[in-house]
Length: 74
Image 1: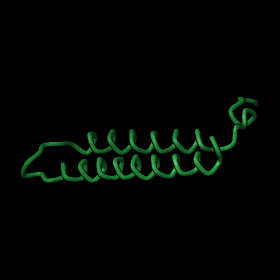
Image 2: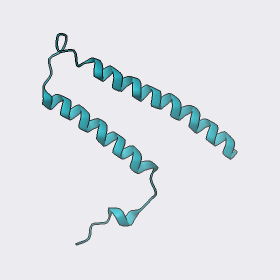
Image 3: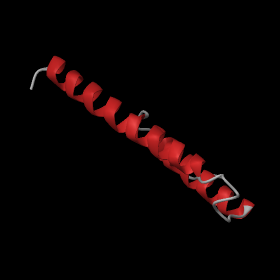
C-alpha cells in the first residue's frame, strides 16, 4: 500500500470517526435537560472523567513511544 493511499485511508477514517465521537458528545449534552432527566453532579463528573481519560489514552497512543517516561524512579 502506497503512502498516499495510507494517508487517504487515515484521513477518511479519522474524519468519520471523529465526527461520530463529536456527535455522541453532543448527545450526552442533550441529557442536561433537568425537566426530562434526573442526574447528580457526581454523574456528570464520572462522565467527564471517562471522556478525559479516553482522550488522554488517545493522545498517548499517537504520541512518541517513550518507555523511560513510564518507568517509576525515586
